[in-house]
Structures are given as structure tokens and as C-alpha cells.
Length: 465
Image 1: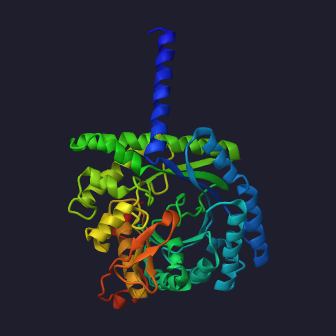
Image 2: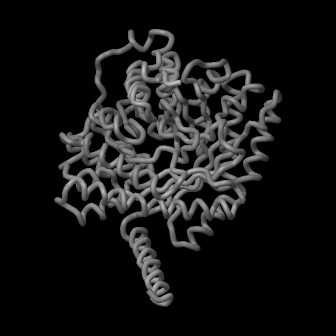
Image 3: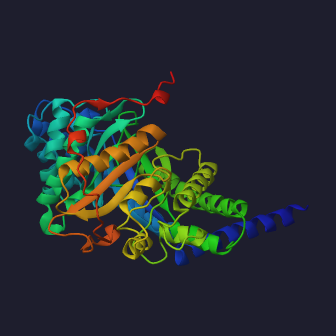
């Protein structure tokens, strides 16, 4: 083959890839969902609360001042939509431990984080967090008890608490407390349909490098600052599957893998460019099929394209397991540093297809729980009746944490007990958070279970040393 011919063929391949990517962006809702700048605040600890707040403000503004402008520059340069620019920080329970003597002291740090988020222009800042999978220190408990007030007083702060892990078991004292905190957060923000709960998530096996809110925090094992990118493309996957309708499972799986590969490469490009522009190391790509309320941007629609009348129909868990696994396989081939929560998200309020399935009666809370055994996260953005008791919320959390612990995977709960609303009513959250029908919750009590003290031990297969 002549040198000229090879050059022509290479040019044709590049032009094909460019055209294909443009189509995914313009017609199939491909986007980079977030560039998240992770920042360590370990050097901001101090015994003086004013000094802690000053150090936090100065460090974040110094590192993140160009984050939004850089994201806009990359978007303009490549034509790739970059929806959100975000920040994650070291769990604040640790950073405030030397200075905070009460929950109210921690609230001042939340207000500093919110001020910084507004000044640098990011839409969310995550890391108002505590890691209590085995036990709670006094300062962990102070932060957890501060969450309702902190989320009511701030606009852009997101909070998360890790309640368990495969290695340590489940901290049931913290699970019980978080049932109360979720309900208190709903009460504190009831004038906005209990919106504070949309910014609060509890985890089992929380990853240190997740760029997606509300669960993002910058783990203590991370570098001083890193760039993590979250990519999303449910519409791209659905369009690809339309072309192989009725084909075998082998063809179905290969199509999902190849599509996930292409999506991840777009994220890799953005991550490398952002890292170069900001002079901050690249961390990971999180390839998550994260839906939005927009038509054609739905994980539920992918499941329907695979062959289900509605998510929730028999076969749903198997279809979701297949989708999640193939997405991960394609992503891992596209980047050496795939991390975070990569896979398929199933938030109810953020996915029009999931909302339709709930309204049709196909999808229940119990079926969603079964689906979380094989998807990327857990019970996400689910509106429940405002009169749901704290003990019932704790029971829902415990069930989901147990799935993560036993299956050695990340699971999460972000439920919203909407004060003043009941089953069948609708709640509007707006923007990417969408809207949701209030779903029924099992009314039988679990108080005697969640009121036991102590921990549920780690499963036997956790002992692998």
C-alpha cells in the first residue's frame, strides 16, 4: 500500500469518526455530564473555626477560579456539550474535626462552601460528608446532625454519608440516625417540596473518585487536586440498539460495548484537555448512563429497546444486568482510568421513561430495589409520602446498604419524603432533577429492627487477606 493511499484512508477514518461524534452530540443527546475538580482540604484543618473557613475559601478559589472558563473553552473548541462544572472536597467531618464543637459550627463551613461555589460559578460542590461505616466519632455525629440545617441554608452544597462497606459491615447506629436526618432535612426544606433531600445521599462502599452529585467527595487517598470527568449517553446507546432490533444477545452486547467505547473516548478527550489547561492531574472517567428528563435521554428507553414493555416487567433485572456489564466492558477498553460509579443509573425523577413506568403501575419500590442489585448505584431520586416514618426510611436504607455489602458493590439511597404530599401526587424539582410521582412505601413497621444498636457484621467473603 502506497504512503499516499494510507494517508487518504487514515483521513477518511478520522472524518468518519468526527461525523459520527457530531451525530451523537446533535441528535442523540451525547454530553459530558460533568467536569469535577477534586480538591484535598487536609491542609485546611485548624483549631480555630474562622481559620478553617478562611483556608477552605482561599484554597478552593485558588484552584477552581478557572474551572468554569476552561470547561466553556473546551466545549467551544470541540463542540462537545459540557453540562456541569463541579467541585468535590475532602469529607468535611474530617476537616472540621479540630475546630467544630457543635453541629452549628459545621453549618458555617457549609455556608463557606456555598459561597465559594457561587463565586467560582460551579453548579454543585460535594463533600459535606462523613465516613462512618464502622463507627461514628463525635465530630462525625456533629456533621451528620448539622445536615438538615446546612442543606436548608445553602443552595449548591451536596451531602453524603457512607454507612457501610463489604469489609466493615453496616453501622446500624448511623443507619438509624440517617433515617431521622432524611426526615428532618425534608422538614427543613418543605417549602421547596423537601428539595434538600435531593442533595443528600447515603452509601455503602462509596468510591473516593465519584464525579457525580450528590455523592461526590474527594477521598483521603487522592492527590491534592485531580480532574474527574463523568460522561453520559443513554440516547446514543438507544439509537445504536434500534439498528439491531431483534438480533441475538451476542449482537446486542457487542453493540452496547462498542457504543460505550465511543462515548468514553469523548470523555477521555475532555478530561485530558481540562487537565492540560488547568495544570491538574487527570483522575478518572466515569462512564455512567445518567439520564435526564429530556426526551431521548432515558435508561428506561434502552430497556424498552432491549425488549421490555416497561421497566419493571419480568426480565427487567436481567436486561439491566446485561446493559450495566456491557457498558463497563466497553468503557474499560476505552480508557485505562475508568472509575467512579461507571454503569447505568436508574433515578426515577430524572428519567422520563422511569416516571412513565411508575405511572403505568409497572415499576414499584420493591422492583427498583431488585434492579439495584445489578446497576451502578441504588434507590435514586425517589419521592415517597411525607408521612413516612424515620424508622421506615432507615429500613429502606438498611436493605439497600445490605445489597452493596453482600455483593461487594456501591449502593446508595436518595429518597425524598415530600412533606404534605401522598401517593399519586407529583412533585417538581426542576432542571436535571426533573419531577416524580410520589411512590407508595410498605406500611408495615420495622422499628424493633432498626432500633437495635451496634453493627451488622461484614459478610464471610469479606475476609480475603
